[in-house]
Image (cartoon, rainbow, N blue to C red; front, top):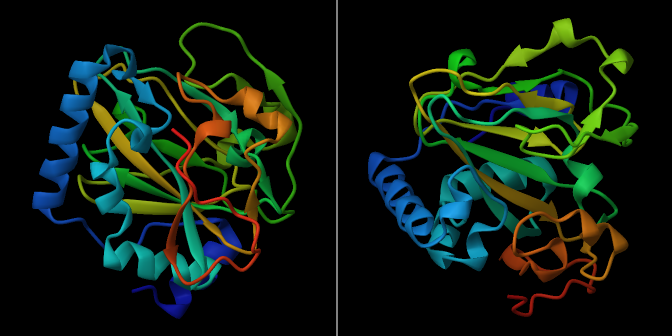
Length: 252
């Protein structure tokens, strides 16, 4: 699915927007499942940190053959899915996501994840699309984050913007069904949605099974929502568990 040039871009820039789009039938199914989820759990109208804990129908999206093929091209054939989230920015009220690195939140050792970001609606600068700093992942290290308790933020930890050049940010503009993939160390964030259009996005988090998801790790305290990170179920999606240490038992 990915060309050599696209794989090289992912290595160099930390992200890729491949020439691929989910079928409309799959998008319709995701929208329907999300609407049912929000009807049962209104607290997730803006952000649901753990979709699979509430509806395993979303797991079918993670099994999409084309998506799995792209992920294995980037992180190897042995892959586990450890989470799926939904970032819904309703029209005019969607929250801002501060600049951060995903790995600051996650109990994975060694730290490694490829995130697949699926546009359920059009994702544009006007409605708060994902923004990235190309190449910010190259050190493969976590930068200093500080806690920001201001209202209107989707996540509480924030990178110091004096440590990188925000003017180099790139907007990841996507049409419904398009996807982007990004590295666990990539600097990224998004603005609030002040437009009249909703901006719904679904994420799939895949890690190579040479890494271990540490359910008992102290960083689990950074989990948000009703289901914290210690309760996430890990799903083997392709190949085998190379570490031999991952717990694939049901956690919720």
